[in-house]
Image 1 (tube, rainbow, N blue to C red):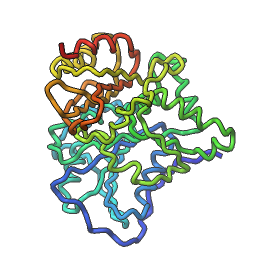
Image 2: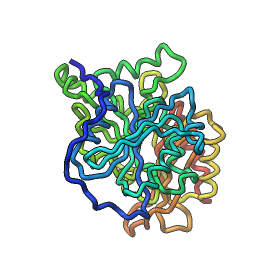
Image 3: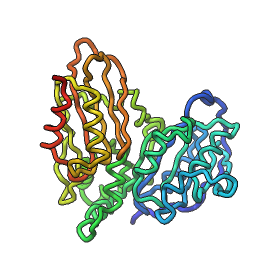
Image 4: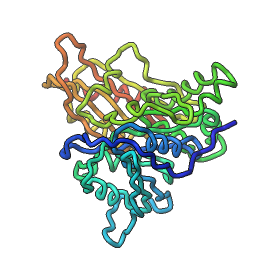
Length: 364
């Protein structure tokens, strides 16, 4: 029998609080939780709100849908907004609220509270595509670095995922499942117990389908979204200055490129090279791809490591849709082979064009 989505509000459980919080000066991480209706998002949120983890976590349940639009959701409408209904304090130190329109206003209220927060969860109930919110949270000046995008967690239903991916066959647009997987840093493959009972090889096939879309995402198996919080919180997936989460790009043995999944054209593609690159040329090349759509490719996510001319620093690249950032991360080790490696996740990616056009970024 399939698990029902747990829509009941979390019960307040009396436990000992934890007053040891990090410095007020550091940013608070925000994790976006997305996924199909019925996949288990509410179950995951309730698990976090009821667990005795000793952390003070704020959960924002948004109710702004596509008809309101992300642009309006990201505008602080001041007193006229009256958009945050009420913060509900739970006995384990977590707080919870529902946001009607302005996410920025809710986040500003959160960081102004005197009690220090360890983390913020945002359940993107009404949005099929997490990219616009991710872009704003990642590089938004309005929030003044008081909060930072930590990671995107997508919950998928192991029973129904294949049907959801196949929905595009009768539609002119891609189903939500493609976007949610393509933008994810972590994918919780929920209800695995129900799949295991049917076929021993079914889960492996599901993982292959997921990695065909996004080979960089980490997959976590779960039953009723019972997951170790350390695997989904404080992952720092968007902290470009930290190269640790990009070290897999330096593993030459790992194949990151994937074939097209069915006829969708959504996949992961990796290009690499050993020549040092000119940083200005590389920025122009990226902007032509991301901004001008010069080669008619739709890039959802982009991650990479770069070997830059006249620099002993390994540079990291990260992009979400049109937004991108290239920053020095750490020194290249003395015996380390300096390479360029860029992973693209998107639709209609053209390997030959990406490889040949990137060669023009190399120093003469």
